[in-house]
Amino acid sequence: MRIVFMGTPDFSVPALVSLVDAGHEVLAVVTQPDKPKGRGKEIQMTPVKEKALEYGLPVYQPVKAREPEFVSLLADMKPDVIVVVAFGQILPKSILDIPRYGCVNIHASLLPKYRGASPIQHAVVNGDKESGITTMMMAEGLDTGDMLDQEAIVLDEKETGGSLHDKLSEIGGRLILKTLKKLEEGTAMRTPQDDSMACYVGMIKKSMGDIDWSMDAVSIERLIRGLNPWPSAYTSWDGKVIKLWEATALEKEYEGVCGQVAEVGRDCLIIKTGKGSLSLKELQLQGKKRMDVGAFLRGYPVSAGAVLKRLSDGQ
Image (cartoon, rainbow, N blue to C red; front, side, top):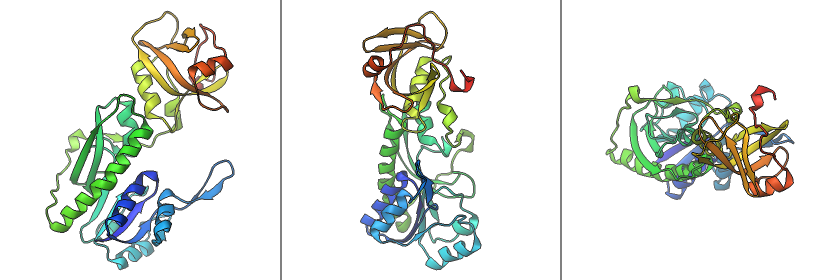
């Protein structure tokens, strides 16, 4: 098929690789403009652009894809289908109507659950037992189009946002080939979404990681995993920010205030929460490297009774 591919982050790359390796004619790759990143603010290409250039594919980076000049450019390419994976811009009807088979989106959830920008993190944070990929026909609404194919996976007990991202990215690359084959053969089944079951999740903000120790231990542990690797869950200790990368929820209850260090040992650091307690396993002090709790305690002694607090509390 003649395909225009639209995507931007790491998540989109396996789908592009699948399309090229399967022998589809990728007419062009559309991705977000390059942006400055890191402390040096050096201009950095998007992961999709990097991969497209490896293949020698034409790359377009419109600031606004809806501009008439760019819409006209796409129309002149006469694509059979436009494949969209985490592109980062809402496509107008003028683009949706261009391809012969329409615009197909690869979405990282089992729709209609988790429409929107952060389905992967929320699946972990909310303690879902499964997640998956949905391929769908794109409509003018946000992730509202008819579903084409789905593939589900069971979440691991210690699943993180990062590990689920990688698994679903690979599934998306595989599932899109199945969907395109059905579209071309005329066997694709379009299943309307049940809007009453829809759940929207917005962009993840860094402030979401500011741990509220009055929450129950299970919820905090899920938050830590869901926001790993970005933006990470964090807390304040003695005026310093500590990122938490791994922890285990315990049912044991302790006296004291929420966030208080309830127990300290050679390789043990347990914090009281609103319900149960949290045994910290891997931490990172501001400006330092990640380390297991034993190494952390050897370098930064913590006393029982010390209190971890929300950074937003200004304490």
